[in-house]
Amino acid sequence: MTSGAQRRWALVTGASSGIGMALARELAGRGYDLVLLGRNAEGLAQLARELAGAHGTAARVLAGDLADPAAAHEARAALEREAIPISVLVNNAGFGVHGRFAETDLAQELALVNVQIHALLVLTKACLSGMLRRREGRILNVASVYSYAPVPLQSVYAACKAFLLSFSESLAAELEGTGVSVTVLCPGITATAFRTRAGMREKASRLSMDARTVAAIACRGLFRDQAVVVPGGINRLYVLAAKVVPRRLAALLTRRLNRHRGLGAPS
Image (cartoon, rainbow, N blue to C red; front, top):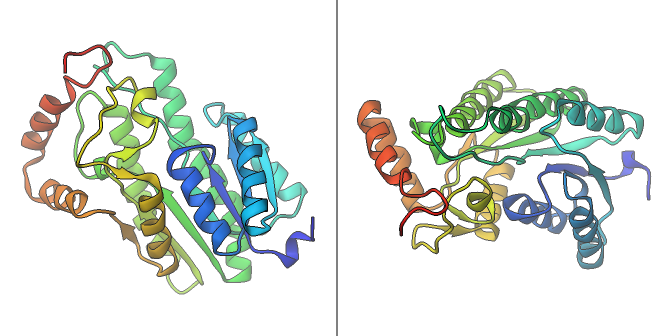
């Protein structure tokens, strides 16, 4: 592997499937070498081999479960130890928990907070100082259209995504003029395994987008230094509606949609 100082490196969390994998492929196609971080070491190693074959991309696999707070700090230490200068940071890792908060598993929800917020903060701190020193860098945080409205039966997930939107927009304003940009991606329903893991029925939908399309739109926005990227016309309409509909009404409508989506619920 060539010295890290001679390469352009991107770090992608949750890269073994879905949007994260699609983003890793997009970045490799743009000439970036990859640090791939996630739980599935075998899946990440397979992706690394694919990218090497398709693009000549070097890849470093960091296996770790970001639900464990120690994993993000271990990744940060590895980046420092190996002196890998990250030019693009993609905070994509995440999962959902579906159900009434009074009945859902607390350990799962704390793990969700660790993945969506704790790990993102640790890794952003780890990469940002080098970006500022070099006066170049891009950060992509993957949020959701649910960042814009309360979401009953996915309350912790939606609250985490609202945090990501606010944090990303705030940090982007802080970094104006530094050469470092922050983009927040807010996709809607995407054809991945995410919904099944969240305990929701996975259905084909005219409203869903495929991960490859979402990743391509996200990367275009990232390299144009857009602050917010909402892929797809339907999703942009949802965001517009969420901004004008009273939040109480939005919560009631979303609750009605979500209450039939648990695994085992009637179609």
